[in-house]
Image (cartoon, rainbow, N blue to C red):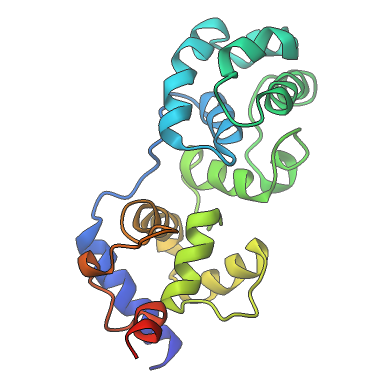
Length: 214
């Protein structure tokens, strides 16, 4: 099977199996999404959604968080993974947005990645979710699922190499939706442990499944 055919089969399946594909993080502004995505690193969206209401009540705008110290932020996020580092990132991120971007969350990947706590994945999420652009953020789910199905070859050993491969074959106008397809498939069906292959409609073309049954 040609690679593009595999991508077409996956797109057709996901469009029916996961018609609503969007972020499960709760937010109402680019600032809130940026905070939530920073907190979500190596942490579940469910946990992040549990702590952000009180956090956003205390710091409703980026200017409010910019006035806070890491020690001010920490009590609100102490149940999140790596809370001390993330509290510092949030305080420094907000201060930089206020000082250098006139209190507006920047909209380009290059500018976003200058912010403390913001790497390429987070910047791509902002582009795809907050600003309506097309991007392919690669988190652990996207990385795992794309390898398992066979969308990317073994030589793609970094998130950036996986991103570049996926961008080649998914249509540009589907990139952001495909990102969420892969995340949601990895979160609820193709889990790291005990994937639910019996509930998956891609077993006929899945490299992982077919390597196990042979």
